Image 1 (cartoon, rainbow, N blue to C red):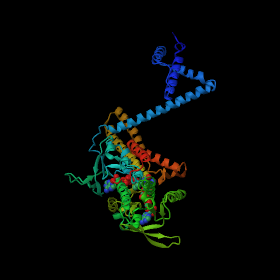
Image 2 (image 1 turned 90 degrees about the horizontal axis):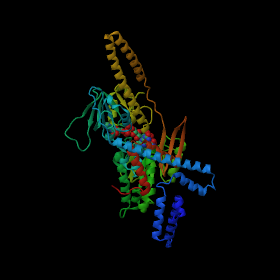
Image 3 (image 1 turned 60 degrees about the vertical axis):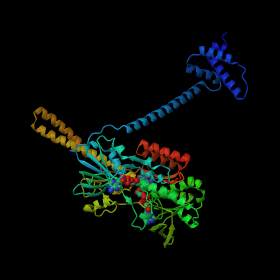
Image 4 (image 1 turned 45 degrees about the horizontal axis):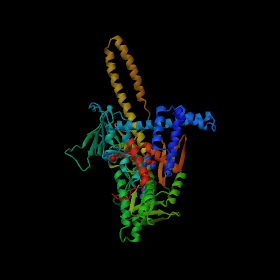
Length: 588
Ligand code: FAD
Ligand code: NAD
């Protein structure tokens, strides 16, 4: 017997679904159903036979409309439904597209293609360093034009803006390192890399002397690398101003091993402070973390350290709560001198709330194993010497010139007045030379020693070298054509002349490359408690902002600036890990 439900399969389906829900609800409330298993099976069979394999979407919509259309106007409902459907479709299509693009990027990165061998007839370009300046040069350089040799003791690029986060484990150090080999292997023509320090540059002989300072040396005693063109991008070393005891007792914050050393020392101080029978005075000293230098490195580190204490240390080691203390010592009247006044005030106010002690107008003069001696200038202008005991001392007082750079400066008379590094002209050529260029912190070009400047200088040099190679090849072509044209028949001569004109036009274009111009995008710094400050170049003016929104901007800006997709993913995962599990308080 055909039931009414069989005549209208959709209704039967609804009825059955409703029945299923009702019975499920009943059984979940502990009721027994009245329909027997056989009856149910029969009903399901009938519905199956009469229900189309796929119910047309329109009929489903109509089914819904029949129920609810009396309350909402039909057209509005249809439009909003369509809008939602398309929004959803676009969202998941973009998510799939983004994911596919990322996978393709990763695949390409993992499968480098064969590279052309360097041509020995081409000029040898030696690049010193694998930091911001040198790497951005290598990124954009067409390596088919030169025999490129890279020399650096560090076989990776380090994303320094997130280095302060590594000192407390917010970000793991490997997440901000990119192996130089991975990246060089993707260049069109192979690039040689030697893991060594450049110990001396002989400008007259055009030779760089190198020394492999690593533990394993091998059987070679090669120390000379000749060059036709040289780019010096060795950065700077930590300034100590000759203050006694800094090198022996302080920790710097420039390289990965500095961050690792600080991370270990923090935990060593904390564990030692909680050691059996420690005197209260010693506990206070061990838990006093002193940062010298109120530039962005010192401020960011102080903020990270206070975060570590607030979010993790005091939770797991509550006995240190009353004695753990961070102090920032700065010789000038304020911290972050390169930021605008309102951001300086905001930073100082935030530090006060975070209970970080700021000691401005205090210049450190001497460092011992357990205390620093500093000269403080009070409000009346009197100078007072004081002793500040510490457990951890982080020294962040800026840059000094590396010995290899100093030595090169001494060889070139035009550099005799330069103090802070290699003086360069507007094309980044080292003054007094014609085949040596300098980028980044070791070059003096009237810009601040920042990653932003170094990377723009590197990109500029890459464009310059690519242009120079193009110019040279056009000039060679022109010379050959001119010779051919002189001895050619009339028709061939006309053709050659037309080609020469075209090449001359191209030559004029390639020769008109303007000088280096720095474009300042702004300055950003993290100040702790999920707050950041930013001085951003905005249209024709400057936008000064600070707080939590700026912190999200800081994070997204630095994430987008990371070297590779791999770095971006790893950094994101580290941030997520810290958010979920907190920072690791074990000492490796
Ligand atoms: P580096 O990046 O220091 O690279 C120098 C390279 O030369 C390294 O590979 C080194 O191993 C190599 N080298 C050293 N000696 C030799 C030698 N004798 N022979 C051969 N190679 C050698 N700037 C910003 O703009 N924004 C920021 O947020 C920011 N944050 C920072 C955070 C920290 C903790 C620090 C320390 C710096 C930060 N900076 C920032 C500054 C920025 O890192 C530097 O200005 C930038 O690294 C300079 O680039 P560079 O290429 O000149 O030198
Ligand atoms: P810095 O030169 O910016 O600041 C060093 C500070 O140490 C100065 O304010 C100086 O007055 C102080 N100082 C020097 N000797 C002292 C002493 N004996 N006692 C007390 N204070 C003393 O150094 P930095 O913070 O290491 O930065 C180096 C470069 O890297 C800068 O150009 C900076 O802009 C850049 N950087 C930028 C960022 C960022 O943009 N977020 C972060 C880190 C570094």
